[in-house]
Length: 330
Length: 90
Image 1 (tube, helix red, strand yellow):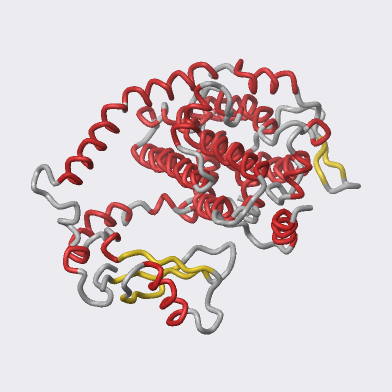
Image 2 (tube, one colour):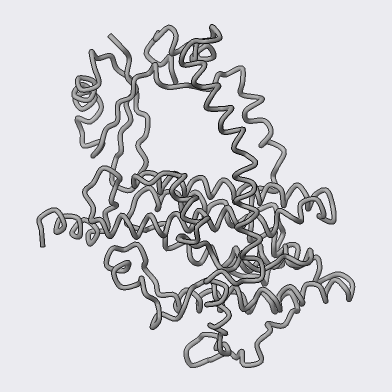
């Protein structure tokens, strides 16, 4: 092994973080760009299924909560794009890779949010699954990604709780409301289990990611962890998990589930999910519609830099103008 | 002599944190001074120096407009939601 590579791996083995200025193998950089950018895309595309319900929320309180939640998802996307940018890739390249289908985002967001119950199920199930995935990523070997995950995990628990709170209100409500909650669980349960990715035996990216400590647990292990948490939570709601084969296995201390339909997963991942085209088309449209804003901001900055309108860039920052006392700027 | 702001990363995996400022003729000298002034006792493993003039800071009088909108949104915290006590892992 080359000395640089040896040192790099030794650092990872000592549980030290890799930082942007460190030497790293090209494959490590590429793997991280792929994973972090796809994670960022998932946050941003994830705004769509719930975003459509903001104007239709059943009360003003639910509306401000959902608005805050969807806003958080956008913020999480930005933390992650920022982390990916430390690896030398630009935002435009990442967005372009998503638009051309080269970069994916989580398969779950290609399903429609048909009822208010779905907003509850997404918060409860999808965000719970995301947390199970993301908690170990806080110890990912790449520093900027790990730190972004810490910020995200801290905020994510609000998302999960508000979802469960919606489910709780529906489950304790009228027969029609209970039916709405059950219907949402029926439609979101299996796609949520697929979020953890294919069984470890079929997972193509795993072994190197384990050696690099980008990944610390297998897909199946994380999926099981989620199932063991979610099944009792469904019981408290008085809702039935849509799996006739589901059973408690006292010997292992885990719930056993029926077979996952991996053909459906493959279909959705390859762009044939119920909303795949719609999600991408919407993202592209918004990106195009917003072009004039980006151009205007760039033109404004250029004008200030040139001093064209007589305004100094630092007019609002006396510290930079006078370069005064020891802590003038802070 | 320009003023520089100094940021130190105490160990790998943590963010650089602002520790103070100093004056130096250029960034290279600022880095040397920062090492002598702020990291004599193994305080860090990485230093950033940034010209103070390049820091755009929010101003005290802008604080209400900047930060007050967050004050009346307790629903952004997980603790806002009361859970039945038999619910675990949420």
